[in-house]
Length: 232
Length: 354
Image 1 (cartoon, helix red, strand yellow):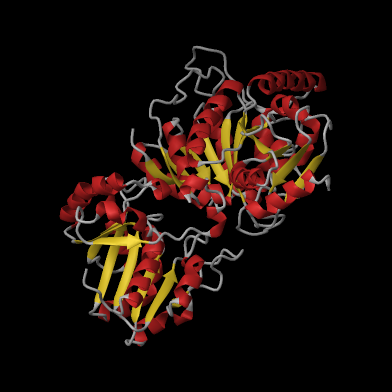
Image 2 (image 1 turned 135 degrees about the vertical axis):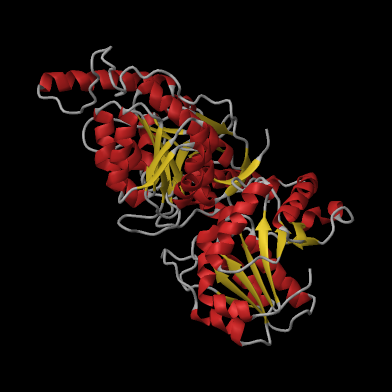
């Protein structure tokens, strides 16, 4: 995938957009692709498990996080931070935008439709996990794509394959998703820009899948405490 | 059959559809909203009805209608929304109508907050509405179990003609795990001869009603209902036991909290304290016999709950106060850490039962 100044991650809710946005921002910084990186959490739909959970790892690496003051609080207010506009105004930085799930989540970016439209250097990526309900077949994924594009007022430029079964994912689950994602790619007429996998699976997958992108999975502490020892 | 990575809320919705539910009436509220969102997407595609009611009160009354007509029907909400449904739950009980109600609990009282909680234990097991009645209350602790108990909820509701509540919390609603949905489940095609389906001029009319003009008649009805509850208490209690065989200290915990207990037990055992877990899967009927069977062997019990001492009453009743029962509480949307529970285990092990 060619890195662009602005990258938007959108898709079915629970497809892994937040984890990918955080990992991609860290990658941009660590590989020295960009000096300044900003992550904007535009998820106004789900107040649970937000980009904010990764706030420490982002700020420690010198990445700016823009998120609603209400994220992870007890207030269920669909709010967006005013600073989000700086992603478009300050062109010296790379911006990573984490949108909320489905068409309802994608509505939030409508506020920035004009500015995003003017932006030439951009990737707008559809995150897909074929093991999630309601996004299991190319036809279902095509439907989600159209709904999001209509709500957001943009056109996707590529697909991110993030097919996984959570903590229990095996390498073959990722491998088995590749032919389905290839079908999705031809139906949607969009290139597969990357296939994501937990870094623990990279050794097994390297050489077998093109454009592999390793994810360090961030599990919020509350969830870690509920996992059995062999799942951590 | 293939595994699917599901949120707890999605698992409830998909398992309900799989169990033959074709009617969903509800109103969105965090942290339960995905149940409604899933139904909104899926129901129109399979010839079912998804209806976002104007309020929770309207939704539960729609449930009464669909159930009276013999359909498998679901409604879901979170704590404040369940309070609003109370009246309807009582009417469903008074009419002997089956329905499945989901409560993905959040912090309270009042508007409270959106983070996970278990503070509706009393509401679910004691006071879900006015009058003498019970609901069966199922409390799963993982996504596969959510799928399984959702099927069971519809089956039990039809079998006993009563409401079944699936009681979860914000963590279970929002967390994702792989699960398999067995498409061969019972879809409730069984005859419901009491349902209001039209006589066709061929049978006597059915009446669904909770009003009795003669107190004797109402008492008779309540007696009969409590005979049924006795049978349920005898046959339907479920629990999981984990390392209880040699346990000196038995934690009693349900839902997401019970998962954290297992990690605390591992830590306690590493320090030489024999701890175990008895996890009720049905909160009503409470697994009294299983608890009583452990009362002689254990030194003490700890009720671990995201509430200020609600389930602890059932633990004490179940073991008839044979052993001390301590309380380990977090509330208001705060979830126990394994260290919170370990500290309580150590205190109880040292003789502090406060």
